[in-house]
Length: 426
Image (cartoon, rainbow, N blue to C red):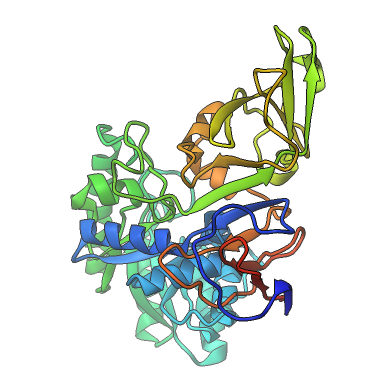
């Protein structure tokens, strides 16, 4: 364990600004995750709640997100890959976990050994059954039907054969078919007919499975947008992702509209300030030139840190005032026009890209980059430390995660001046 500076142990929260020694950080608030889990659970009750923490908890730290979700009452945790699920088990997450995206190299035997439920789209069934037979331990599986999204999931044409084979393996004691699920394509656009069509296909698939002798305890379809807008898709459980992290899945409804609180704040410090004349070109390609004398601030985050290169006129806040980026985002940095050659902005001043009390959202950056808030929060790279600061009170113990550039550890931090920052090394 490394601690810089001060003493070990729990420290006060919430965090206001970057602690000494940190040039940049994504500040993660588990209290916001807990609030969002509780809010969504209230929408979908009595359905159970599965919280997706794939892609390192949408960039927030998978273990941090999973622990907060479980503390708030999540029934299940969902991940894409078995490797993600195994990491959660190693970190002490004991609730049911489902992994659904596999390759020929997926370790199904270890998944069974670690009591991880396995999503089955087709080809995996025989490999999972073989692993279960070798272990003499039944695998818990969820069968996935492709109702129209066109990614993984069994096709409608092959579904009768899949459920028949699954029933046979279950009769032999190799499998326990726990659930049947699918994924919605356009639930974030509630007026589109395709969601109704997908639900019709899903209902038909359930009937085929029942006729094959399968009786499952968990039917799950709804994602975050369907949790809010399609109660007919809730069934026995909903699987929620982006909403848990305080992001709206809708183009016309904000997180605040949905009662959600963003759980990530991205901060850094001004790396340079300089005065330039009218006509000064900015960054590669000189795609922007200033039209008056001004001052420029250099922001030490770039596409190497996950800031989208395509972003144009993206907002940042410095000392309580909002500015816009100008010119192309580079690998390590981008430029902000401060608008006044006599600016009071100085090297070392804190910069908020989004989150916190800035009034700037990940969705704002998504619009600037012609993408969605999901991508903005998930793509923040490993060079940006994740600092865990629980706004509800004392911070919890640190987890293995990301504390310094190039490492994968989370740090637990407290108020500036508290003299304590705790981080665990893997």
